Image 1: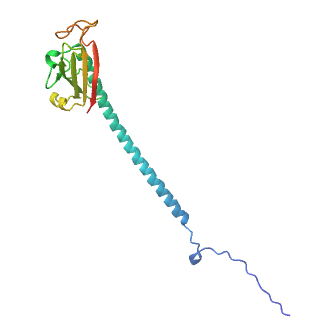
Image 2 (image 1 turned 120 degrees about the vertical axis):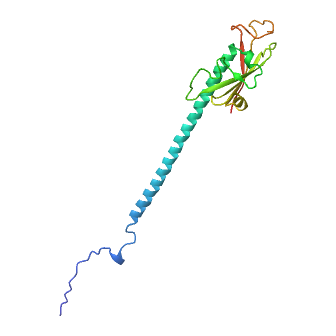
Image 3 (image 1 turned 90 degrees about the horizontal axis):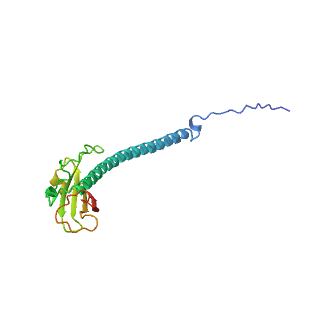
Length: 193
């Protein structure tokens, strides 16, 4: 009997090269690149959105400051004309005249970076409880009285009662006593441009 000898060859560890390579080699790298690209696009979109919001906030802040300056100047004009009617210059004034005796500027040089003027025109009814109806037009100081009256940034209409307290008789002329000029005040309208 003949013996057959077979030699067993050790199993070879074949490396994946060439045609025998698995098809998913490098797919993790591609997935990582896709993920990084998606994250980068998202971050860029959020950064752009944040920048837009910052610009919008600045714009709203600027408008708010202009509104505050207009409101403050109008309130100052309302209080000034309440106790000092200035009927000689403001009655049926077209174009309106300054709401204070020294000129159109309020004496407040700058409110929030804005310089404002208020112009007044008065309808006077000395025998009525609504003695004076004053229209106050407020604009930036670069706008003329005529242009401001035509298109005010803020227009306030205020009614003043110049009757002396205690039910006194109707007043035939302008009030002269600081104690009762503007005894009552009603804001009829407050209109923004």
